[in-house]
Image (tube, rainbow, N blue to C red; front, top):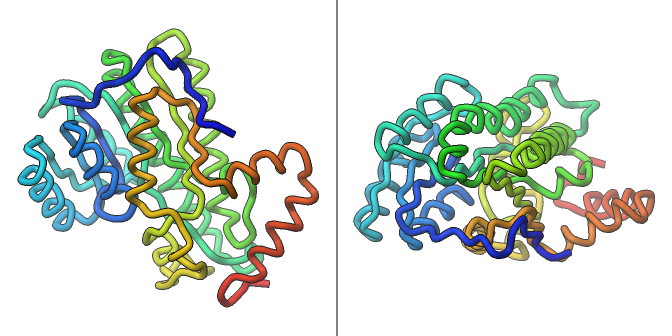
Length: 281
């Protein structure tokens, strides 16, 4: 399954574009900030870790000679998301690209997990995307810009031990898919990017059954795609005005099997997760 483009003749030059990135203090978000800065974009970075975010912003400005502002933002708070976009408009007068990257995961069987764990994942992964997109929408319509959702293969196939994560990513995908159809004639592009398993800190900070970060990954990080590679592919997708990015062979196979042989895929996914470190079943 190749990356799908909405319009292959319309390319976006990133130089001097205004790019808003949530969850930008680490992992894929930080890599995205560096990648877009390297391509000449000006940045508005949002994250909860404000001191770290300021350091990243200052280093980017010194290294790449672009303008980069840091905004403390917890995407579970609607007012924070509104403030993030307001700061972008006040500083730059427009928004060209919104990358909804902020996200958390989980690792617990549903029967053991507290309800608040699932609620937390929906608040960050789904509602954070909704809030930021809502407040950025007028500016994106004016610029004929791009909305990006950093999703997951978990948004195409439910993964055991990640029921809340899969639910939030399915919800994100459905929300963005509806937006894409609504904006077929407005010039706004909507791209869903699904990295697959990526070497980042999302598994280390994944919530356990009680809602506490597990502190270590249950998977082999060395065999995964790097955050830098994910960022490069997302930036390329924005330039090419892509519709969908599924970045790994395993992810592409998962999407195909989910449509053609769903029962077989259930068994394959079960067997894979039964072999992870400290399996849940």
